[in-house]
Image (cartoon, rainbow, N blue to C red; front, side, top):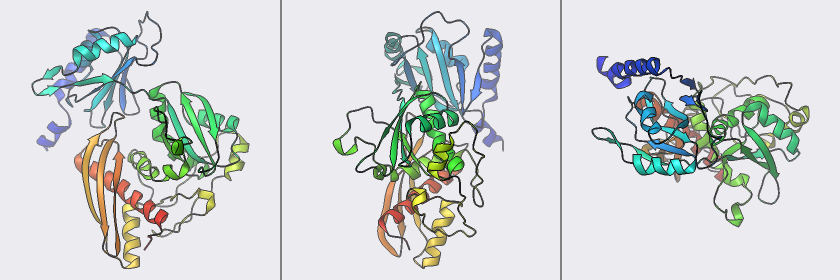
Length: 380
């Protein structure tokens, strides 16, 4: 027990942070898995930072906190905002974001602090933050109107500035390109929109970053068919923050501020009837995506058992940590009675321990395998 506690929290470091906060009268705000300073701080004389004014900091020791990091990065120039990603345990998640008043200060921070040794054996990585601000939301009904979806998104998430709709060959229904006020607002929206649309409208949408580079002609309209294969990996991390339902999901009451026209276009929330852990594939009202009311691992196992093809064999390995905070896992799944081998990559949010994260990764893998089986007609 003592060893486990030492891995979770360094009480001396926590106490040092509390002493520093009181001594400097610094205020930190905990929100959405991160601890934030400023945005702006109480005393700020410069303009609001624009693009290219933020750095991404990684490889931070898990028991290093703002009492060390904020003074270090403030030594380069005044901080408009500092965000340290946190675990439930009280440790940091190994990365943070620091925002300055100008791109020139950012360049200086990278020059001076990239490779800086915080403590023996720990050199931090400092590079310019990507700061993507555009998401592509696919799988919207063909009758969706721009003013309606704009109002819906502003009810569901914060920071929505404008929306443009696209439809045409290669796109099922309508896709929306959504511009946000900041990278942080877009990141928060990306984590919750899939689940929010499912709860509010019983509808599966895909949500992914809008590419910043010039897209290929075949990918210029954020096609829904391409997004299908990405959908399960996005659902994986979203389910990490909330328990898996044991039965059909309950849907939230439609807020009065959501336009009735959009709700009528969607068809209104209709809970799927899944009294047993079996999978009946959806009709056109679900836009061709699988909606799971039980654990995907349990569902895949039950399907294979019922079909008599043998249980799935999982090989799941940690791959890398992305700049957006997600952990990426590569996988290979083999089912004795199905000749195809399923391979791919899923991403999850970091968890309190290795076993929990591996469990979440396996859920995301099973979900992606079920989607691939459905899309390719390889259902048992």
